[in-house]
Image (cartoon, rainbow, N blue to C red; front, side, top):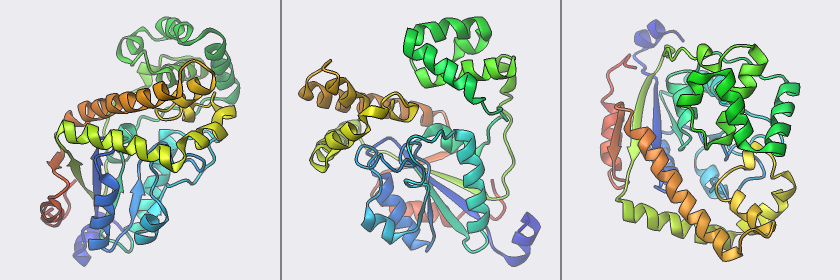
Length: 313
């Protein structure tokens, strides 16, 4: 349906993005709101999409999935390469289908790049050929992140100054693109916003810092009871995969390697999750399209969704 058809029928299509830091309560709120609007939810969590990562990603359980139809929850094996670009293409296709029968669709999660990919778009970065990816991975495994940093500095000095040099995945990806295309990664990034034929409402969920940190600690404790250690042990042979370079798993891998104690692994999971929450909030605070609410303010969230004028973006 084109925007003109939408106006003719009086329908307005709106994507509501429920975002916020890890453990803030996005899943419960998105399910409550989706039930109120009789609609469906797209997950935008870059780890909940993997089939084998259940406990450590706090993926929605059977009751939550039964309450509202979800998309992109545990749909691919952890051994399969999956990119933000692929998510954007697939999510837009799902939205196109859902908007033929739903006026409002929800998307929820804390993966900042996935949210931006759907709402703003991504530059058309080419796929990395398997040989190049394998070569960069071998270099990383053999010599560590510092060699990749130095290589990126030579290949793309501009992106070297901009990228998070502590994030091995980002550095590796930039090097892969440089080697695949023969061009600096920065030269392929235009930052132009892609048009969307649906309205977008961004709702941020926030809590006081002490409350959020307490929820993070209690979530980690709950994961231990639910079997995160056993889940991580089962994934240990695959620890070299980028998908498993993730808080909640890499600390267990260090414990299994004998580098840290079990108690230290648990302490670091809590600490690193708090650090990740701070990083998420810093990213989201730069987006002035987000309206922030306390989790108890669901009526105000509903009012915001319903007051959107037809045709806004």
